[in-house]
Image (cartoon, rainbow, N blue to C red; front, side, top):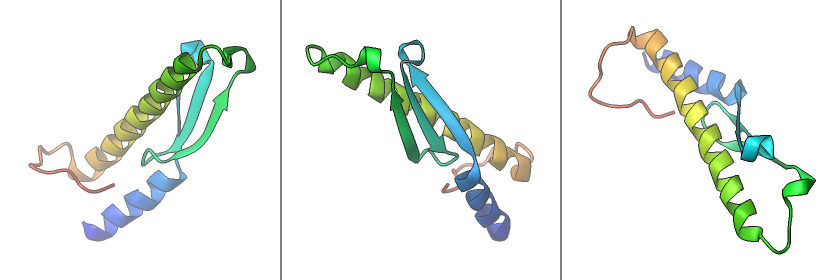
Length: 92
C-alpha cells in the first residue's frame, strides 16, 4: 500500500487542474496536489482603483483549483482503496 501511495503522489504531481473565477477572468493552474503552478489574469480585470476585487478573484480561483485537485486526489485514492470508508486521510 505504501508503494502505491508513493506512486499516486508522483502521478498527482504530473496532473493539471484549472480553477477560475470571474467568468474566467482569473484562472489558476495547479498540480493534482493543489500546488499552484500558474495564475493568469485577463487585462480587463486589472484596475488600480479596485485591487480588492482582483484579490478576491485570485483567492476564489486558487480555492477552486485546490478543490479540483482534492477531488482528483480523492478519485485516485478511491481507486486503491476500493471506496472503503477509511477513518483517516492519506497524505497527498
